[in-house]
Length: 133
Image (cartoon, one colour):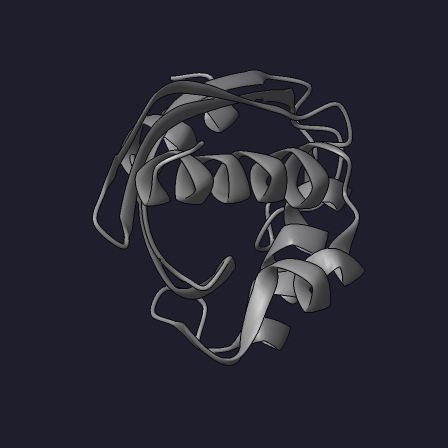
């Protein structure tokens, strides 16, 4: 039998694969609770809009989980995103440069649904890689 932590890690891993890697943006209803709190992108809709911008700018993007830890209802994730800047990204025209950036995510999972998310990304490194400097 799985522990709560194992189930929570599995839920978050499945969400990352479906939402971020497969770009199934409508899977939010499957994985996120009705009272979900988005602390990085304002709302479920904000999360979907940001993901769409990433997909447009980096259509070959791939997220890889480097480390994932479940403790109680919290799941902490360290992952990387790699891709090629092929579309407009926050006003910056495509450069063709590749990115390889580390992200940190914290999720809270209750009864098999993600109820809260906050995330951090190394934007300084990302912009340097996009601009090629």
